[in-house]
Image 1 (cartoon, one colour):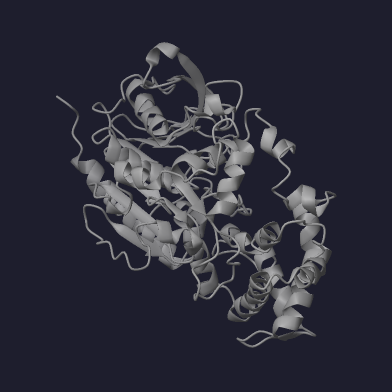
Image 2 (spheres, one colour; image 1 turned 180 degrees about the vertical axis):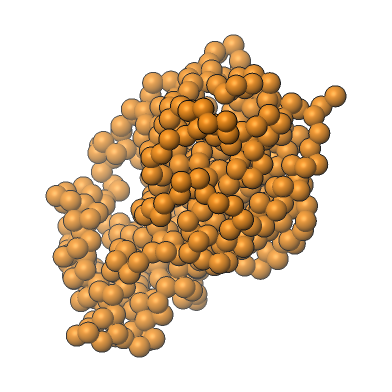
Length: 510
């Protein structure tokens, strides 16, 4: 690592997995006094500021809403850059304040370049809502383009609360747009759609190519999880799929009961429940200890009488018994607490509050709106003939049906998201923007939607560098993970090198 950290202490980065979303991991940085370069005490990094954001960029006459943001200028000196990031599809107050510090790549850039860092909450997430509800009518203003326009309007309009903060707009100071996961894609999409506003960008695990049938989510998981574990998972999934093809309802019911899920009425809901353990992979980072839920799951399958199974696993019978036991004794309570299986996992009872609750600060609902309309990313079974750790029963229609469940006023029938239009408007894998740094992880389940997807072979250039570490999801955004993994430290060092070069080239507008 190139830079010394101000007051850094090793802190645990907890599992931050949000099922089904390309979400940015988060953690709470240890509290410390924040001071300016001259020693003046600065506001706490949890201080909330408000910006009058346009409700609708296509109709400014509708007025504004209060968009929350946070910032830190402990490293700032006049002439330094403004580093802007939105955490994307989450409440920005729930652990993302660390992204204004040098515990993250944002703060490392600011520290190196004597800049200030701003985190802004995405519209319709947390408390940054144009309206006081999440009905279909309100969410019509939750689009990629409105989110892009929010970032641009903030950069070009906001007077920041730091000294001199009214004179650091693009043209007066260089702005760097940073993002990870969905917000990493938003970084790329913004620089494509609104060139010239942000001088440079950093996009980590950026899911730039929207994909409906996103079975490739599970490819890195299958490739890098313990081989004995994947073998036994494949055996159970193949067994379920065989029974489904021949309509062996009795056999399927027996299998469900082995997992304590006999009360699940629909077989596709059961197939989806078997994905849950695999989704735990997204919470992993290189420093993860063996006590994480994903490794607990594999150990439950593969350690028998103190002996680890070989690469082929223990076989179907033991896999059903051991995986089922893990669900019954450990995982069911983790997922469902005291709810019955149908209430907890079932997706057919549309009267449940999960589908009908329209109160604000409901990230699942807001993100589902984006998924159903523009983004897709349905994590489903692979094409026939490919090794499967996820059932072929699961196809996009399973998720598209749930769009109708949640938004019956908007969808009379299961919708297909407009991914072709999204990729065409914002360039997807075809992105070619100067001074945009891409960072990806070899073991990231979202890798196949990034510019490091297998077979894409996108060129790594000095204009638009593409680096890949041996990490998981957005691993490179966290300073401490660079300490743990030299390949991630190399990505972070390269990013800082490019930012230094690019920012040295910036000149104010005449």
